[in-house]
Structures are given as structure tokens and as C-alpha cells.
Image (cartoon, helix red, strand yellow):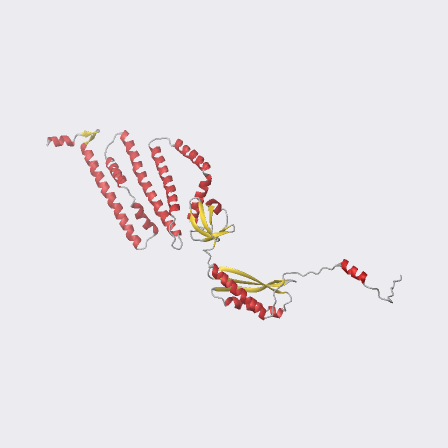
Length: 377
């Protein structure tokens, strides 16, 4: 009994052993309480999300799932140590450990948030069942995680009393040097990220850039490869690609067709009045077509011009060409049936050969009895 009493009242680091036992008990209780609280909070949020709660309620359980047991243990130990009467030099070190544990767990939560939100974003912007762009997704996640852990490391070094100004200056100078050395590569890389995030086109889209038409086969980190309509493969740098206007034909909902019909300028007005209704009926006969308007647009000494506007409701190029051909042939037949001739764009100009006329007149024999009159003044 005396030995137990001596053991209880013994000291370790100038702190009674009984205080150490109490601190251990507090640490164990704190660990189980925090672990149970996090589990209960996750289950409650999961139940709320099943009832149709906000997206934040669905996001928090995934973030809390990245809670590290190591940080929980460190935090529990620090809670237990808080009941001890530590010397001043140990109190400062304990404060550093608090900052380390809290900073590490916060960094882990932010790291998980980056992964979850980036995956949700790329899944949301994917259209027509297209898969998530793994390369762009990975690069963006890595870049954000690199910035996160660099900031965490600098914060830890600063907390323990190390001057990080030199490290930050070195990172800035090194970053500038690297950026200048590989600026073209970085330009294409950031252009690739812009394509992945903004999605002006995707693999399989038919696009046109500066008169170059083709189907997108691959979007890489530096270049984009197209399969041209004529069959060859075209490789374009991503930075150059985004500097130009891109026409994406796959995202076309319908095609607007503007048709000009020119007839002869001597066509009577009564006949011209029949042309717009005729054009409307021809267009409306076609399938998957919406008629817009038909008007006599202008006339001059050479021709009279009608303008027809209609929409092909499906974007397929073959359907567009078939419809246009059918409309054109029908218009030609109807105009010929009404004896309406097309305008002739060729101007026929007769030149008068003055020299030839004078030569023929000189060779012509003079008529007898011709009297030449003179005007008297």
C-alpha cells in the first residue's frame, strides 16, 4: 500500500504521476467523443441528403470522410496535455503541435474538397454521355493540390519560427525563370485546361477553324488533332486554336438557308405577285423544314431578285443538301411552267466599228442625179 502511494505521488518531468494518468484518461475520452461525434454528424447529413437536402449536405460527409485518425490522436493527446501544468518551454511546443494538427487536418479536408468538386464539375459539364477528361481533370487537381501543400508547408515553417521570405522569393524567381523558358509549352498547357473547362468543342465534334474543317479526334496537353474532311490528319497547337474563331457544327440545332432567285427584269408585275406564294408552297412541301419568309427583295435593269428564308430542323449536312436540291429543282420547274425566265447575267454589248462603216460608205457607188444642197446664210 505504501508502494502504491509512493507511485501515485511520484513525479515525472516535475509533474505528479496522478496528473499524467488523468491526462491519459482525458485524451482517451476526447478521442472517442470526437470520433463518435464525426460519425454521428456524417450519418445525420447522409440521412438529410436522402430526403433531398442541399448539395452542401451531400458534400460534407465526403469531406469528413477524409478525417485522419492520426490528427484525431494528436488532438486527443493535446487535449489531455492541456490539463497538465507544463513548464513554459513545453507550452510553446504544445502550441506548435496544436497548429500542426489543426493545419494538417484542415489541409486534408481542403484536399478532399478539391477532388470532390473538380470531379463533380467535370461530370456536370460532360455532354451527350461523354466521359470525363482524365488528363485535364488530373492536371487541375494536381495544380490545386500542389498550391495547397506548398502553402501548408510554408505555414508550418513560419509557425516554428523559420523565416520563409527567402523561400517565397526563391519560388517566385524560379517560377518566373521556368515560365520564360517554357512559355510556349505552358501556353498550350493552359489552353488545354481552358478547352477542358470551357469546352468549346469535344472529341467527335465537327468544327471549322480558319477554313479548316474536320472532326476532333484527340485533345492533348499541347495539341489538338483533327481528321479533315479530305481524310488527312491536322495537328493544331492548343494556344493557336483558341486564338481563332471556332465554328462547332455538331452543336447546331438547325440550319438557316438563304436562297436567292433571280428572274428576268421584263417579267410583268402580275406574274411576279405569284412568285412568293409559289416559293412558300415549295418550301413547306419539304419534310423537317420550317418556312420563314419569301419576298421580292430588289430589282434593277438586269434582274428581279427574290429572297427566301427557311430552316432545316435537323443539323445533318446530308439532309440540308437533299432539301436544298429538292427546293431548287422544284423552283426551276415551277418558273418554267409559268414562262418566267431566269435573268441573264451576261451583258451583250455591240461595238460600232466606225472605221469599217466609213470604208464601206466610200466603196459604195455614187447615185446619179444626186444634188448637193448647201445652206445659205
